[in-house]
Image (cartoon, rainbow, N blue to C red):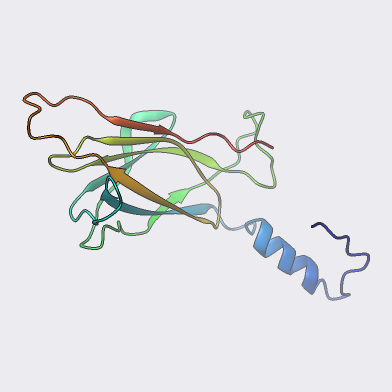
Length: 153
């Protein structure tokens, strides 16, 4: 439900509250990723998985690499976010930066997650389900790809 507020408080407290909850402050240029890695059905956390974040424009140079703990969580990842006026879908008030993710662990297929939109001042949470490589697969080759659809304007 959308309602109109005909008059804001004279001290702009309402306006500041709206700005701080809907849009990152002018000095906030970082977004955050909270990643948890679990087995395929989500039953067990995977301890020691390698999580690598890449900028979507350059998949050859990692931005950051971390390792999951015994609960399957990676340390909170801080990423730079900037407004790109060349991207038609991007709104200057709700800008984001796209990142890709690669998760690897022994005896599991690598999992790639594409087009993660990271917003300034916002923590994006992802649970990555890893697929176990069957012991009967003599020459395991493959990967699991997940593409996150863009958020329309």
